[in-house]
Amino acid sequence: MKGDRVEIVIDAGSGTTRTYEITATRAGRKVGITHSRGVVEVSETTRGGSTVRTARFLAGRVLALVEHPAADDPVADEITPTLRSA
Image 1 (tube, rainbow, N blue to C red):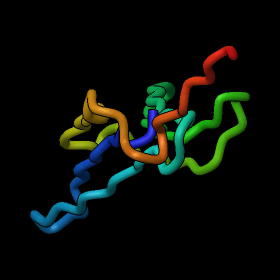
Image 2: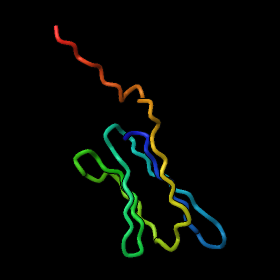
Image 3: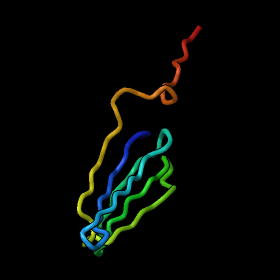
């Protein structure tokens, strides 16, 4: 859903951290997280399953992975008018 986002905080070395954010930028897109073989992958996908963008991080470097769901109230461009029969 548009507005869903995932925030990733990683250890950048020397005691510093970096924060990355992947957001569903259009209506109908979603953000998914997979974890396998020591790699955390966050990707934005379309309704049809095509990947729009992907971010990969070493699992050992990931300090936090926070999912922020979109607001329950629809955004103006997500509202679809209803059609009435005559």
